[in-house]
Image (cartoon, rainbow, N blue to C red; front, side, top):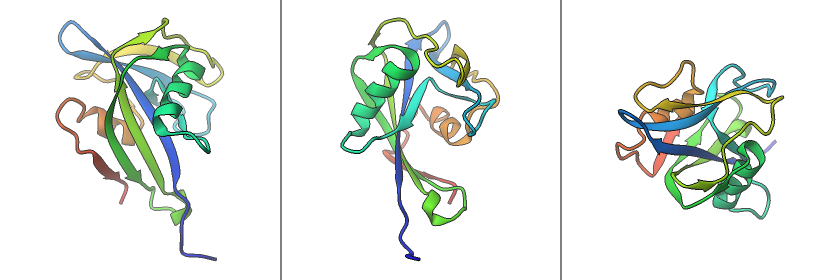
Length: 151
């Protein structure tokens, strides 16, 4: 067996809007996915497919999961992460934020999403998927363009 690992890329989109006291983020409550069910997570996220950029994946996932067409995307950070498992489990995640979209966000995949709701960035629900919480806690505070999680 080779010592090389396969990196699995994913794109995450945080829809943001102005709230009463701070910016708000749209989050989904995961269910029946086999990963972090019962945790709040980015409203739309998923694997980057072969031949697709992370930007393209973000736009596709937003259409598929919450039924919106995204406007301008802002790159937030890339995150190399692991769970101290076999090296095959290493991931590279691309996080984007978006403040403009067409359509009303809605649950498109009800078998995988129990709820969809807006939360103030300074009042996030519990629990949030840990590596996503890491980024959300730093959103708007100058998060580095490259971060690591789990090493």
